[in-house]
Length: 188
Image (cartoon, rainbow, N blue to C red; front, side):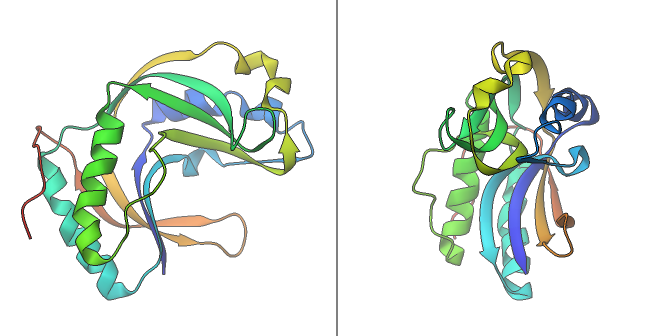
């Protein structure tokens, strides 16, 4: 199965992030994400077995004691570059808790054979994918000023991704409720 670990958006945040989709859909070169499937990917796992999924679920359990990340701002951007974007997204500004949670997930899954991500973690929610590189600044309606918001994630989910038929479907395999702070995963 193809799997990833993600934070789901609460309904109010999802609605705020869906606002630009009407404008984005006017561009023929953009494929928008269904708001119901919007999420913040914490760790992409790739193709894994049922046994690995079970081990991942067990390894993530220690996060029940970890406080959920809090975001306070979202800024429209494009990846890999703003002026030649293949992905349009909201990059999230927080108090460091998103990166901390991602680091804890990396630490918990590394002993299971999932290598650490080589790139710096940039918390973002994908809005659309582009068929060809596009200048994200052409969407001036919402690309200039950041959106102020307050959101706290309370649940981390291990998902199975079904890529066919389009659009993709995400099946939750295991959920971890996030709670009070804890500094490190239990030793293995």
